Image (cartoon, rainbow, N blue to C red; front, side):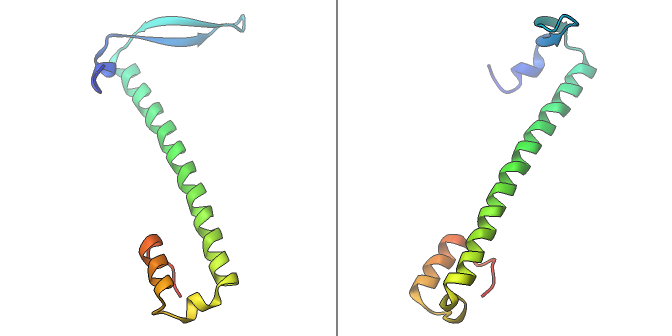
Amino acid sequence: MGPGAFWGTRVMEIVKKHDSGGLVWKRIKLTTTRKANAKKRLLRVWQENLNWCQLVQYQRWKLWLKYLDAKCPRFVTKKDALWRQVVDKKYGTRWGG
């Protein structure tokens, strides 16, 4: 199924929760409004996942910087050391020192 095939369908199966507490598959006609709402919801879910991943990476990054400041004071002072150039090349020079 191509990337446009999902949204091009006229009928979409959804899970609908009834009062009985069980989940039931139901086929609904996919109108333009329902299609737009489904797209918005998927984008919101994907954005939340992306934000969560970025937050985890940012926290790792902060931890790495804290380690360099505490355990490697030479990293801040010796600008032309070979190992500093390697770390700068690998992780970037966004952080000071």
